[in-house]
Length: 423
Image 1: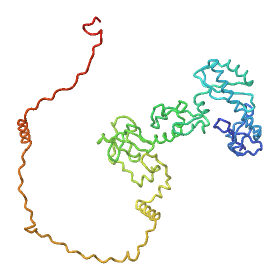
Image 2 (image 1 turned 60 degrees about the vertical axis):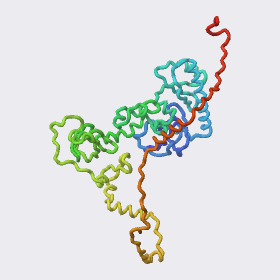
Image 3 (image 1 turned 135 degrees about the horizontal axis):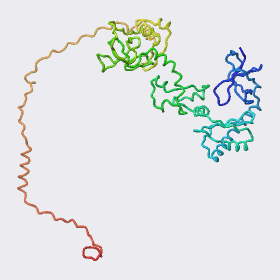
């Protein structure tokens, strides 16, 4: 066991071990450490603690001192110098016409070295650029070409999940990611949905890959020949999170049904012929609610949620259905307010109400009877009205027609135009 402290440099997400050399360093304290490139200014993430010798890379670099006010002012001066160097370098790149993109600038703690990070599609001849930058800053100049993932790690940003980029927060090194991981997790192969801010596959595809591979090893493949409580059929879909399969039965191929893995018997895993496969006479039984609670995976809440592992000890102590109803009743009684006690006058029995005699229905008297009038036949009076109007029109004398007093619009033909003119 060796006593070390963990420090992290600015712009990085990886912790490094350093030998405190008898210094007691508290977390979130800035220190000056010795590295292969010289003195560096870093922040202590974890104070003095012991780690196994196997986790240490020899030789272990020492801690020079705890940072003072002068060291802090030097670090702030280097940050201002980095901003100035970034603008000057962009102007020099444009002047030389180089096809490269400047990403960041780092200045060493001692100020004798400046590192420029850039991205480019291919190799870039930046020898003349280095000479111009050295003549301006009077320091050692180093240009490093980085990839798009390193660029996203340095600049940072927000992912499609709404959280900061993993590489900028806690990933110590990049992990290899392949398109096979997206296929195993049944994700959409749309590049815009499985790619990160850097344009490469998202690093988070690796996080749950082992869980999906473990679940896939226990689940049958598509087109597998299985035996279910309702008959035999082929698997048409697999749900790894819920550990369920969708089976298209031979007796009802148009309506696929879903079953748990424990409710089916795999007769042939994967595609193939059914010839030579014996179907057992006894069919698998359905899983009851009690057996589902004792299974290693129990769903809580809606059906769209992933299964939550439950220890066997807790599953064994689950109450029966009657006990659950009693527990719910107790909780309602325990959480509800006490009912008010009735008053004495409310508890006393009320005297019965006297029954009112119901009047008997009697036939109506002769005087009260209403005689119905005979119904008159309805006739169509439309034709009669039309004939009367025609007769009245013939009897009236003819009136003289009204003169048309409407004036015609005045129009004057322009001179020199028309059929008789010479134009």
